[in-house]
Image (cartoon, rainbow, N blue to C red; front, top):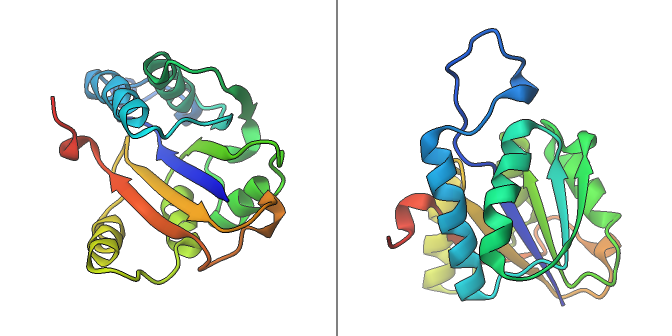
Length: 176
């Protein structure tokens, strides 16, 4: 069994129009949402062994704010290839993950992250799973997290429509 956590970076600022997209920092809302999501992940035991994070400033800052809330140590790799990666590219990166990792967290960007989650999620089997899928399909906002379980032993076996969407959480869903 492998668990994949797909996290879209927290809300970024657009105050400086001259700033390169890779260099945009988190907004105040993003700096508030990221640790709240990290605390939620800790409570739900969504604790990664391995983290793949885009090298964009907003994804790195998201990880830096989520990580202390997890109260666990994970191996982190900052991957330039995750910056604005397509769903297919992300799936390729996921398939290359170290099999020693049971839970992989990928921190990236839309539209690729949202498309990756949609492509990997299989058909919902229960009314609750249908509702979770509908919410994710509606919108994958900043600082949202998709949790997918795969009945596999090796990451290279991750395949479209084979993941079970266990949870989808948005900042608006979190209790304060």
